[in-house]
Length: 195
Image (tube, rainbow, N blue to C red; front, side, top):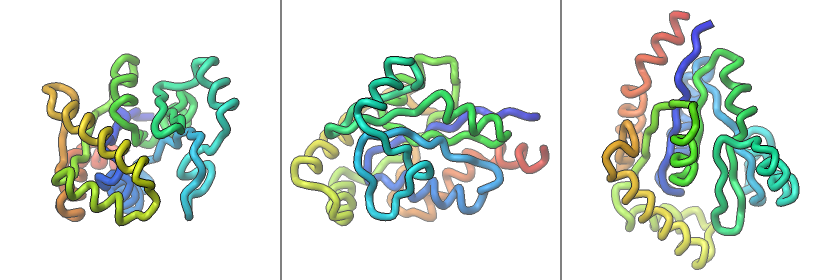
């Protein structure tokens, strides 16, 4: 069975990475599989446990961290997030290309492992546009919005560093950004389809 490099998709909350992932998974559901992360945050409306995230409590999360179960984990806005080694292996075992949706802290952690994925950063057109998107969700308090904007600023600075990511896609138009994402992944898509 052919194995493929995992793909790390990263970007600030509100950059559109989840929307791009959903489009990719919808069009190429047989080719890609999403690595399902663990989190201690409460589910948003419509999110499904085991599909969008593994929703767990602080104690369970801490046990997994203590047992070295994660490739990466981080705390954001009082909630913990992590990508388990098992989640990645589960995808690889299916023969599909594993997609990881993680933040900057997670990217730095993954770079310290032997995973060797391709790193793609989804960048908003501007911080103002990002703030408008986050406000449009109507899920953020002023405090959580400020934290997300501060984190976005740091993520944009990191993404500008040489070698931080293999590719940067500015998502000012969803269809254009999606076309660019597919162009980056087309070699793997073609190899997968012919295997």
